[in-house]
Image (tube, rainbow, N blue to C red; front, side):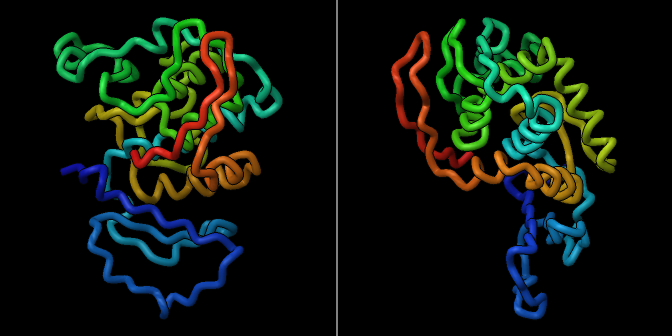
Length: 227
């Protein structure tokens, strides 16, 4: 049985810290956990780290990683939100109509993008990683790969190339889909890779996103999401 998403516990141990394993409390109640050295990739502790689990919004780490790997020279690109990227329905309608996994849900987290809003790739990355904006992920995916489905396929190819064997994504933001799965081990691999990028490290340590003025909205400050 696939573990519940809120039971996925991911540990990354950076070389910036010196930690004695003997000092760690390894009485971890969550079903799935891993402690990995971010520099070497050495696994220091694991607990059912290869079990399939639903990744939820940790998916956004992988979305950001793929963008940084393929589009680092285009971070100032201006992205334009489309109707397809912003389409949102109730979860019930989404399942009943068998809509694509990337289709947004009414109660999902977002940065409240509007149709034809123009915003930079970097600001969308911030909106995705700090505010957990599902809409930001869809717009990013469409801009980078032409359409969201192609982006997801390319994201899966990247995960496989990095050694992930238990991962299959169906969307770029992590909204639930029974076929959208990963493992604590695979997420540790992917997060370790993402941490190599200074912009990623800078964004994920932030607690708020200064959303810039765009063609359709005034500037605002959005806070870190707990999703």
